[in-house]
Length: 281
Image (cartoon, rainbow, N blue to C red):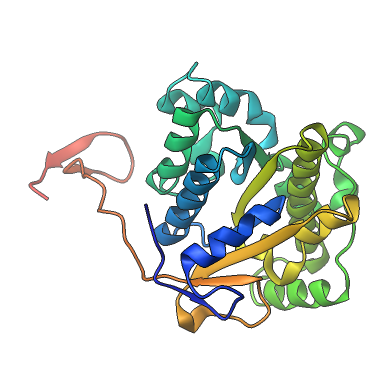
């Protein structure tokens, strides 16, 4: 079990106190920094806790894109192994973060046969929207997505401030915001679809902080479709990263690093796959 050090500013005074409250919610969001191990260990602990409570639940993740749900299902069912999962979901082209970060959640879900939902939109569509806008999609492409609502005022201001610092050569901030909303709306629609088919289930949603912060994005998109839905947001990190009113509960954690990957020790030239030599490093 992974027990974070301090729960800060919320209605519970420690990790156990917080987790005792979570049973009253149907959707529990945990916002992550994608390459932060401590965030994924908190997610794994949440999965353990809900499984121990014998409450039916599923895990919805940003890490996999919706068209690859059959391969995620096959992995959870034990029909394919981990390597086949990574290959068939095109993980290293579409998500790319160190797979070891996600293994605690995915291994446990497979062992315990806990459903994992591939919530994210296809990268081909979000890339096209970011470059050319929603109107560039063909009717067939558009049919793969839910309705995309523009952000409300405060959310729009935050998105504009975020993207204005990262535009580079891109001169259409509205296209970038449309791509962001496509991610949010698609993940929300997939989560809502699951809950409508499984009203007795709870849902853990693991996605980047930008998709849950300030109760905008996925939480608000889900609430628009399911107004009576009880949901709670959690995020984590250092005290220095704490932002008032960002989430319902903030969990303080220390930085934890994965061991370095093994290295081949081969020296390649820059033009071919020819190995020039072997080193001892």
